[in-house]
Length: 537
Figure (cartoon, rainbow, N blue to C red):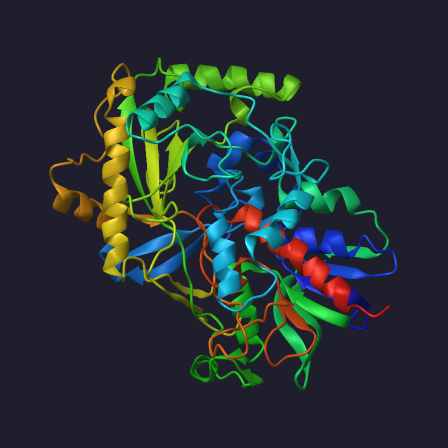
């Protein structure tokens, strides 16, 4: 691509939002789209075989594998922040759980001064994206590009979780994306025919032959090109060269909660003090860029189980099972290789007077320790609990002016003591569930023992081991012009800069009550409608 090439739209980041947005905009053959992605194509079997998530999540395979700055709330530890670096972004390396959040979340966004973002207004966008193999009702879509179903492998251990959860007052709720969120369930996943259905596979790769769509991989966005207060395209690094691509209509950032604020800052758009600290000329002072970082703080408890239990683990029996499973998956695309490991869960309220679920449980058929970076022999079961709407707020800044350098990530985990109190309450809930009678036949000792009658000890273990559940948002917050910390308006236009939008999870003013992949795709669907409505006839 030469420096003079132009497109109607230039998009940075081929993650969940970027893939969906590029596909939707290029549906119009009269519109040209260029999509830049820092990573490579999504051709690896590690992406398409769902169980191979365990090879990518703890490593740098298709993964930025960022670290946070030391976190005082986590005893000074650096947190780990895996992010996808490949077509499909984090949807190519995640656990594939399809979760939308709660109706309350979107109505709250609208109440904050963001018209068009209420639940009733975004539900059609979720439905447009979706093809759900199980649910055919007013809450779900058929015929959309994103396939949603159950994995082609189940375990009786999942039923133990369901029974135990119901013993503790959590009613069975098969469709947590439907009328009610609260209850226990089996997770639905973004898979199709036994393979991962990432945003790339759903939206982008079926349309790579479109003559009006150009996807440029190994292209690290460097900065937004500006002509005064108007965005005119993007500069990017590729193959040792700094190149440019021009946007006739709009430039859209879809680089995520870390990448989009980093790109704005490198372009001279952001808090003056942060720009001046790195010697970047201030093109537009926008104090909210990189602020308002929110993430789901997560705590995992693990119990050992015998290898005879239908779980996953490092053992002779486990190796034999997986060898047979690999052959089954290769020939039939079914069996254990289709597992996301995170298979069952629940949305719960921490107290009876809480209006909507504020805690999420994720049950895993394996030993989980430090994002699978610490391996243990044997088999186990784990349960995650996360605070859905944390009070703590962090930030994203720069470590330097080279866009290939990782951004400075500071989630400020547990800086608000209310988050610790909620996480402790949730940990006590999940320990009671796993230590109840349905698990008596398989449950062994805890990997990191805690006692229900020792909340101080459990709180100390939380500070020793809690970390992200991989859902950073909010660093390019959506809000009206009257909000001094808003970065984009309800049309996703960057305040004060023409021709520039942000369309990814960074625009969320508050973190939703659930996983963020499906909402990021919804944001892209919304952005496509907003952009097309603004496009010249």
